[in-house]
Amino acid sequence: MNKHTHLYGKNFNRRTFIKTMGLSTASLFISDNALARGKKPPLGHVVIIGGGYAGTTAAKYIRMWSANNIAVTVIEQSSQFISCPLSNLVLGGSKSINDLTFGYDAVQKNYDINWVQDTVIEINADAKKVMMKRGDISYDRLIVAPGVDFIYDALPNLQSAEAQKQVPHAWKAGWQTVNLRRQLETMTDGGLFVLSVPKVPYRCPPGPYERVCQVASYFKAHKPKSKIIVLDANPGIVSKKGLFTKVWNNTYKGIIDYKPNNVITNIDLASKTVTTDFEKVKADVLNIIPPQRAGKPAQMADLLEPDYPWCEVDFLSYESKRVPSVHVIGDSVAAGLPKSAHMATSQARVCASAIVELMYGRIPDQNPVFANTCYSFVDNKRAIHVANVYRYDEGKKIMVAEKGGGLSLKPSEQEGRYAEAWATNIWSDVLT
Amino acid sequence: MSLKKYFPVPYSSVLCSLVLRYFGFTLAGLIGFSFITFGLLFISAPYVVDAAEINASSNQEKIHTRTLAASCAACHGTLGNSRSITPVLAGLDATYFSTQMLAFKNGERSSTSTVMHHHAAGLNIDEIDQLAHYFSQQKRTVKAPLKSQTLKANHE
Image 1 (cartoon, rainbow over the protein chains, first blue to last red):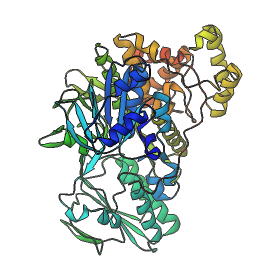
Image 2: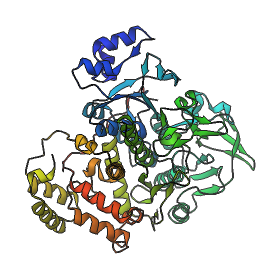
Image 3: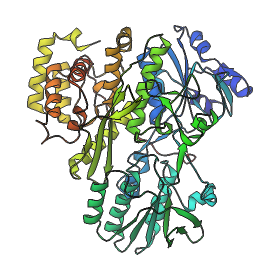
Image 4: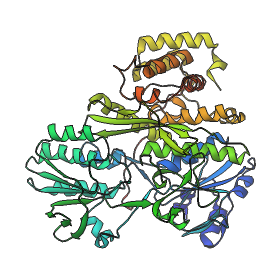
């Protein structure tokens, strides 16, 4: 038992914990627990599903801005936080996955957040209750921040864990990333790396093209006879197009063959051969980034649009347009906004601020403004960026990019250093 | 706890501008600045958040500014306390902050700017002044970056 108690954070006393573990249907009343510790009664209880960039940020800022008057519980499946930003550098070889892996202890402790390591199996929005494998939990407001879910409808044989070992997506950082790096390491010189890019919208718009740069950088230094084919389902490079094109044509000349409008229709796992409308390609290392939709908990709560697999929200509070008292932040949100880590944290803070105001009976900010900075590394040192400020448009009721945002003029080591600083600070902001 | 409590504003403002002028925006400069100005006052201080103070005001301007300011945290740290080479904004002199942001916005600092001109351009002058005031009121803390750890075998 002791081995597991820490997973529930220090707010969960042993008695509550044992009760939960013993009775799978028992409800957890966090506010009771706070009272038991002699603290001021909280204004209410916010449950957050997902401990990624969005969910963890929301948890921290709700605690901070409510002066600890709102109890917060985070439900997260994993015991560690692994950053997707910078994970392409693991493929290039300049970072290890252990540089990008962090614990949740500091943020839990510093902000007295209830932390539950469990998997959500059902959400009952009428009863305001979340059911997990090992217990239930009640909420006043729920934040759903599950990231993306992969769609395997078109490639059903890629659905199994075994298939994803052979053909990794490496689009959720962790052992998938390590696996893809190992495949690149064991590939003989002269081999072919094939990357499939899904149709927009997907997590991290420039990510696939940064990945191409990182693999090309590794090939150029260690396997100079090897080649890359990019099968892009989109009609062209989705983000930072001019900058990536220039780097591919100059720094990585002769390595990359980019094919737009190429959707994979069939895959033979054994031979790593993919078929598109135009051709058959046999890869030595095959990396398929599947098409995406809002994460599973969002699906459970019926937050997705019927004809569009993402969640419509009110951009003043990130409350779902379909289910009251349920908020959605991060990659699952339906928006013309890039699905980036910085964007996830920016949305999380607007949502946190609005929830605090609403629970105090006040009016949330009616004109939210936030920033997004997104860096991509084109080799092990040089980076490029796209940066924008987004402002709420009262007429359109969406976040609109302000004039004056934009891209780097060219890749630079200075921006590489700033990209590292961005990572250092966003990790510390989210996790401490 | 705010800077004001410990130092009268003119002193901290003048010192801030002078030190920043001489040290520039380097990490060493910022650490040096923190040591010179505050000695060991804050080194062992616990993580302090002015949550009650922020929360006391319910008006739109305050919540607008706190959320906008928090958006800077990705590069400049929680409440403006950077743990890397990006400048610390916490406790920065408000006039200095506004002047620099306006220089980014007007393109006067574009030759030395990588991303800041893209951000400053999207903010109005009121927002810049409110951010300047907000960050000037935040306490400076010196903290090491978060330490990474080994990926566990049982993780997905």
